[in-house]
Amino acid sequence: MKKQISIILLAALVILSLCACAEKKKETSLEPYSTGWDGVRYTVTPISNDKGTISDGTNTYSYRYEADGSGYSVTFTYPDGEKYTWKENDSFSSGSTSLNFDSGKYPDGRTLKRVLERSPSAKSEKKSTKNVGLILFLLVIGGINTVWPQAVWYLDVGWKVKDAEPSEAALTWSRVVGVVVLIIAAVMIVA
Image (cartoon, rainbow, N blue to C red):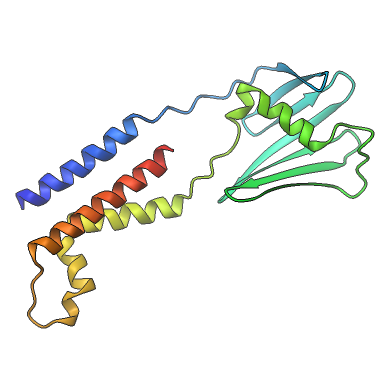
């Protein structure tokens, strides 16, 4: 029993030490700021953490971020109502315009996206792409392997063999795997 408590405390300390290294999320500044791109000066005015406007001195374009489970998208709306949407996830990114978009009349969506990316304030507006379901799954599996290695052994091997008991090596291996899985989950939380 003392060995189990020691292992649980060790795993908890490792996870807490990894989480303590995480940089706290900075609040997004809602103050307007200016940045240049291709010789044009743009003023970005955030309205909230996920939407705002961009002005080039002549026209004003609105933008809105939306997050989903695997990535984010940002949609720019032009003065004439046309839209450009940029979608990005872990493995793929693409941009698309509405059908009647006039590319000679306004800057393209990639330019507006670059304007947002150049701003230190707008960089933090990108939504997290953490897979919460996978992180929770790893926490549960790692916790069960670390705290109840006998139960894991019985679910894997014990039910197949009559009157069998797990060896200390099998229990230690289960605990090691549990701690490693908890560390991976902690890294995913921090990253």
